[in-house]
Image 1 (tube, rainbow, N blue to C red):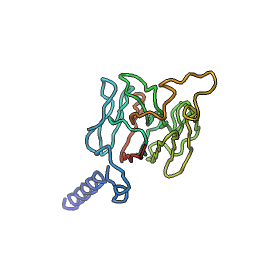
Image 2 (image 1 turned 30 degrees about the vertical axis):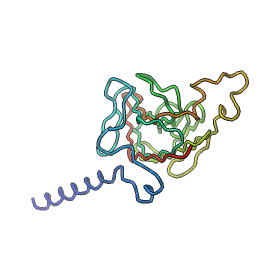
Image 3 (image 1 turned 60 degrees about the horizontal axis):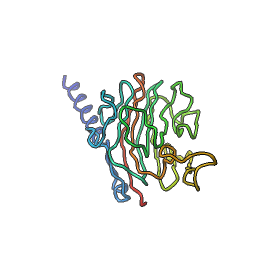
Image 4 (image 1 turned 30 degrees about the horizontal axis):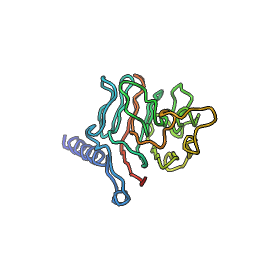
Length: 220
């Protein structure tokens, strides 16, 4: 009995240590201007764009469940870096949005979606810039944590996964105007605007998880 009690106590201490590690910034990151936008316990500062429940906090993570939903961090940002750890279940489909405008009960149509998908039937996988840059092999496995590092600066958008730069996108709408015959609209002139970070819950078969969500604001 004593051995079982000791084991349970050790497991409890380990669980507490793991929970405490969520949303912790290193001293070096703090000095460099990084801040946490998820406290590991609540959804304070975040807002769902659907009336039904779709996100909860479990074990220090934001977890998506149920049907379509998007969770917005309610501060508009223009030039910034975003780091977060992400995990997606087998067959799941999710995304991380930047520069999006608030939209009630709808798929976001402004800003940019960076796909989260390792084995869903949608052929574009994690690190794809939806409808712009297509990656057909995910840089991670099902149910495996990976780190997104997304940099929005001026007319560029940079994507890193687990520290590796996968692409740098330069918005053509900011390179001297729209292509011939194409009208500039608020929907396609996306990268220079302020907007929100958002996390996606795609469908009932999807269970995305997000933790250690950090932002560093960059000068305009």
